[in-house]
Structure formats: structure tokens, C-alpha cells
Image (cartoon, rainbow, N blue to C red; front, side, top):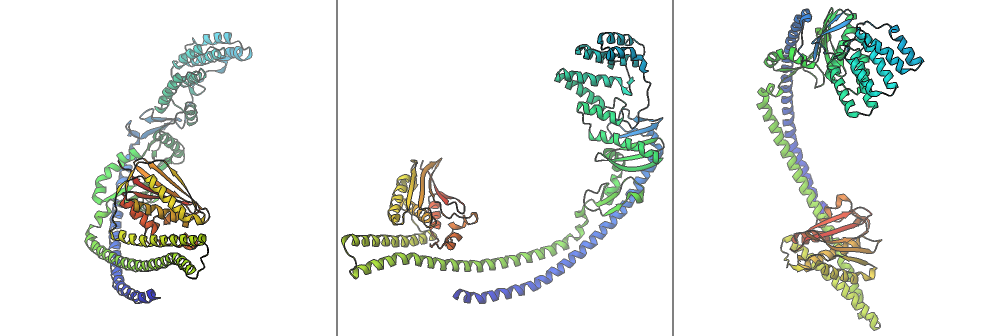
Length: 617
């Protein structure tokens, strides 16, 4: 009641000062915000106007370039390094500049086929009579024909019969002969491609993986170079057979030409942007002439010449909508261009420099006020909270210490009254009274010494008398004394010692720290009345661990409990009394020994406190 009565005027004063401070601060914030908002709107409008003008200039420049290019599509010749191809659609076929640029073509012109009856006699021997030797002889006569298409077909069938006869090496030689028959087609397929694919399959069957991979790599290179005139299905079939994945640029270019082939039948001329395999492509066509171009060609041929215009206008240009909303936009449907033109300011920071001084001043004023207000409120709240917390902790401390003193004093009073009233009977009963008085006196002495030591530690006046100390012997003595004092409560301590090196320590102070850990373990283990103590060397340190199977400590409390007057939530909920200085003293003592205290704990799983001291070298 006294604390609340004392604090009430300060709380009213705090509320009044905050109200008085907030009114001018709110007014300044409002004026600053309005000024900044007007500046921002004016700047955005100016930038938008400039971007709109730049968008019109860009559209005009692009339209002029495309309009000048379209009548000259027959003369366009992209470089070999460009991701573009000029196409002529003529007589059901495509001609490209540069040549061999496409992986596949939208249409393949028909080729002369060998009449089926040419190979009828050999195929009857092969399939009906299953006489591979005579079939091979019949096909060898045809392999001497002056017609390369007949020779290629004969070599293919000879190789097939040799494989059926179990002669793979001669079959491979026939495929090589077939591949040398020149640019002829069998059933619409290039003979040399069929031969090389068959040779690859034969090497795989023979499990000659190195040679098969070499053959597949060579085939992949030729497919990528557009060596053969293939349609899309055939290309995908052969590429899939050897596991070839074409570069995205080449695949998109072939797909764009295939799209052009279908589109030009609907519209004789046009310009459009089309996405092929996730890659944007530009298609221009007029009559039988067309151009398919990828992003690199567009950048080099059409956008690079716009660089002086973009720089002069202070804008940047994009044809995709992947970034933030543009400040100016011209739709493809409105401009007739194959793209939607999107324009942004190239350097927004440069646009706002003329407003920077005023803006910085307003922001600085608002920022300083915010910092002062927040800092003042924080410091006041922190000071008030700290005072309340200290008052509460001191109240708890006084209550806990009073209870700690009350227990031994009550015992002393009861035993003294028993002696005064003559209720102490025989010698054994008097001896037990004397022992009880001794334990109570010793407990009072320990409490008083703890409080005095803690006061000296807090004041930095606690003297430590360091000397080489056997940690195992010291712990053993503390454990024995603790067991004697706690024997009436049924407590037992299991000590495990691995002889460690000596440490530089104050035996009395270290004894006090270990006793506090044992006392804590006993307080917070109401169910399990066994405490485990272990002493062992740990590298360059000596560890003294005290473990219990008590209540455990939540993770968020594990640092706080080493502060003075702080006790865990479990102590209050379980009615466990204490002064809240035991662990703070342990931390002080160990720190004075240049050591550290570690804690491993979890609610319901007990706790392990470990004192780690540097070993004496």
C-alpha cells in the first residue's frame, strides 16, 4: 500500500508530461507529413510526365525502325552469333539465313523414294525364307547400283541381316558405308542420320559405352548445328534417342519459325511477340519473307540505338512486366508494335534531389522528436518499472529471509523452552536437543554469513584467498558435511570423482558455491531425494557438476535466475521458499575464480549446474 501510495503522484505526473509533449509533437508530425506528401505528389507527377513523353518518343523511334526494316526482310542477314534467323517460305520448304540455323523445320519437301519392288527379292529371302546369307548376297548386288538412294537402302538391309546373323562388326561397317552414300533420304529420313543412329544403337548393344557415347556426342553436335533437314517430330525422336537437350535459344528459334509458318497462312504480313518455351521471341513477316529474333538480337539491333534517347530522357525501357508498375506504358494493341512498351525513371534518386534539402530537414526534425519522445518514454517507463521491480524483489527477499530465519529460531526457542521447563528427559533426549540446537545455530550462521558475503560481493569488497586446491577433496568434504546436515530429510548424494588437476581457488568461497548448488538441488527436488555430484577434468578446465531430477527450469528463465533476488516461477507455484541470492552468489564466486557456470535443464527433467574452473598449469 505504501509503494502504491508513493507511486500514484509520479504516475499522474508522467501522464501529464506525456500529454503536454504529445500535442506539439503531433502537430509537427502532421505538418511534416503534409509537406512530404505534397512534395511526393509533385515529384511523382513530374516524373510521370517525363516518362509519358519518353514513351511517345520511344514508340515513334521503334515504329520507324520496324517500318524501314519490313520492306527489306529479303535482305536481312543476321550474324552467326545472333539469336535470330531470316526465313524464306518457298515451295513448301524453308530457306534460312544463316543456313543450318534451325534445329528443325516446319515443313520438309518431298523427296524421291526408291520403288519398294527394288528390294522385294532380298526381303522375301530375309523375312519369308529367313535365309540371311542369300538375302545379304541379293542386297550386295543392289549395293553396287549407281543410284545412291538404292545403295543406301541396300547397305541398311545388309547391316540388318548381318545383325540377325550375329555379326555385329560387319554390320557396323555396312552402316559406315551407308553414311557415305551422300545426301539421300530413305522413307523421308536422311540416310546418314539413320546410319549413324543405327551405329549408336549397335554400340550400345555391344556394351561399348565409350564408343557409343562418342557417337552420341557427334550426333548431338550435328543436330545442334542443323545439319539435317528434319521436321519437329523427327528431330525430337532422334534427340530423345541419344538424350540430347538442345540449348533454349536454339529450341526457341525453331519454335518461332514453326509458329511463323502457321501464322503467315492466316495473315500475309504482321509483327508479333510470341513466347516459345518460356523465351520471348519477335516475329516479323511480309509475304514469303520473315524474321524470327530473340532477346539478344532485339537488344543489339533495336534497343541499343535507343540508348542516347533513353539517356537524354533519363528513363529506362522494358518490354516485360516483371518489375514494379511502370510510370508510362504503351500497349501493343495501341501502337502496332510487337511489344508493350513500359518506361520507368532511370534514377529516381536524381529526380528528387531538388526536394532533398527540405525533405531531409523535415525528416530529421520528425526523427529527432521521435527519438527524444521514445527515449524519454522508454527511460521513464524503465525507471518506474525498475523501481517497482526492486521494491517487489526486496519485499520478497525480506519475506523469504524472515522465513529462513524463523525456522531455526523457532527450533532454538522450542529446545530452549524444553530445557527451561525441564522437559528434556534422559541423556539421549538431551543429546538430540543439543544436536538440533547445533544444526539450527549452524544454519543461522550460514544465513548471516551468506548475506554478509553477498553484500561484500555486490560492493566489490569480498576478499579471495587463492591457493592451489584439490577440487576432488574439497567437493568430497562438502558432500559429506551436506549429507550429515540433511540426513534427517532422507537425502543422499552420489559422488563420482575422476581425479582432476588442481585449481587455483579460495576453498571457503568455493565450498560456499558448491553448498548453494546442493541446497538448491534439495529444495527443488521434492520427489527424488538423490543428488548426483561429479568431479572431473574437462580439457583445460575442471568441472564440478551437481545434478538433480527435480522441477527443472524453463529456457526463458535460465539466464535470469543468476540475477539477485530472482527466483523461478516453479518456486512460487510449488511453495518453495528462498532468498533468491544463492545462484547470484555462485555466479559471483565462479567469476572471481575466472571460471563460468553452465546450466542444462528442462521442465520436469531436472537440472545440472556445472562449475568450470581453469586447471592450474
